Length: 278
Ligand SMILES: [Zn+2]
Ligand SMILES: [Zn+2]
Image (cartoon, rainbow, N blue to C red; front, side, top):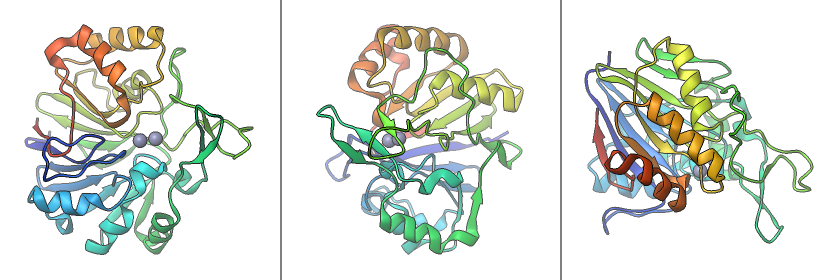
């Protein structure tokens, strides 16, 4: 069991403090007993300055986990490598695939990993652990690998495609989540949660054989979710999660408002600089 788990938000869409920069992206600094983890890296290199302000030394991290190949989670890879070239990397091989999102005006926007981050990751290729299935960093820390999509009301949360002609939908099968077994229950950390929060939690319960989920922290990508999906997700979260829920990044203001109507003060919205202990 992890005795001391601390999660600090390095990058998020909103900042809690004028000294800290925000951007559309996500990055967490995680200390789990002795282990230090960078989970996602935001869109640019702002995690460097934010880490300095927060008194975090990125050079002391042994592990970098990339939740999926979108630009807003991988954009700071070069910055992390610059400070910490020996860091071990964990991600799915799909991280390099070109990806697109169809905007409301019909235009296609490239949203895959940017060229610079891709080049930097290729320079670290011998330190990348490819995660194609559930992986244990230790007895009490795991990475899900690709998450089976079993629930009938969840989708990837947007108009995502593998080609600029919008012919091939992107299942974002590289999407993965991280979990920690603590003395109070399982703490789940998500990137964008394109697999859906119900699918993600169900899979972690299957992998660990443990139903006791304490909390969920990260992007939930519910900004385009239907009322039906929101209702069903909340119903599930209410049954599955015993503690608070920490929506960040791409969860969406409307969805957060909805979550608040169901969970009230059990919802703690993340922002840059926020720090949580479990
Ligand atoms: Zn994202
Ligand atoms: Zn994403």
